[in-house]
Every structure is written in C-alpha cells, then in structure tokens.
Image 1 (tube, one colour):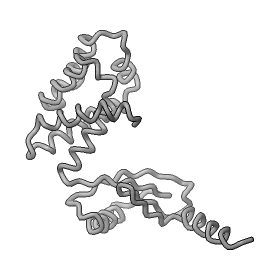
Image 2 (tube, one colour):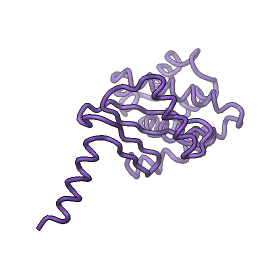
Image 3 (cartoon, helix red, strand yellow):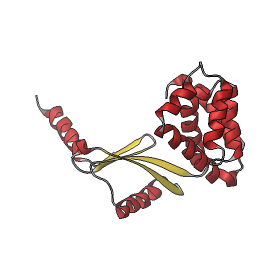
Image 4 (cartoon, one colour):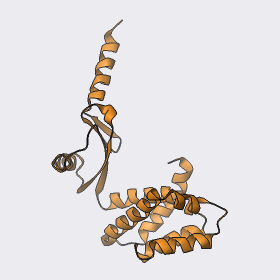
Length: 183
C-alpha cells in the first residue's frame, strides 16, 4: 500500500469501525472478509468500481445488488458513502486497513507463514499455540502461502519479526557466515 492510499484509507477505516460497538467486531470482520473475497474473485467488479467514467449511482446500485443480503446494513451504507465521496476506487486499501484495525481491536494477531508444503491441521494448531505464547494474543489468524522454493521448513512473520526455519534460510545464513571469513 503506497503512502497516498494509507493517508486516504486510515481515516475511512477508523470511521467505519466507529460505526460498530466493541461486541460486534465479529460482524465487522465477517463483512470485511465477505467484501474482500468478493472483490478478489471478480476482476470485472474491481475494474467497474475503479472506473471514473461510471457514475456513482450505477456503482451504488451494483453494490446494493451484490451485498444487500450478505452484509450488515451499516457496512452497506459505508460502501455507498464511499461511492458518493468518490473513494470507492480505494476500497481495497480501505478494506485492508479496516481489517487490520478490527483484528487489532479483537486481539487477533495475523501471522504470515510461508511453507514448502501445506501444513496439516495438527501442525497448524501446534503453530498457533506456540504463536499465542510468543505474542500474548488471544487469537492467531494464519495467512499461509505455499512456496516450493523454500525446499523444506517454513518462515513465520509476526509484525516486523521474522522466524526463518527453512532450508533456504539456513543455506543463506551458512553462505553469509562462510563468505564473511573467506578471504
């Protein structure tokens, strides 16, 4: 997300979360994930919403037809306000920032995991337990990506901290170590 998107998305994300009480964070998170997954699955919808030549009323009608029964009325109204203000083109960055703030408010830590092969359910559960102890978060949400280039092991990113247990990382560390002492 570039700095312009952050400047625009931050106040909108904060305003959106103010519409909901502390107890309804589950609703917020479900709504944001619903809208986000719909956008990710439809490239055509993204293009249509970001097209400045299409008038806001058409965009509002489209949003109503897609999300009317799927999301909370407050979330739907918020999306319509974004259309009115000409900010619907920043919807992806607003959704990302809103989700980040909602997870933080709900004490859910999002952890990025890159792995060479898919984790089993028991491996995911064991990793979640370790990460809960490490971060002190009540809940952990794993964002898992499979990267065959890692050869073996996995890489965990919690905020700015990176834990690299992959063979690729170990080889990189070894070459750095050997390179530092070889003349």
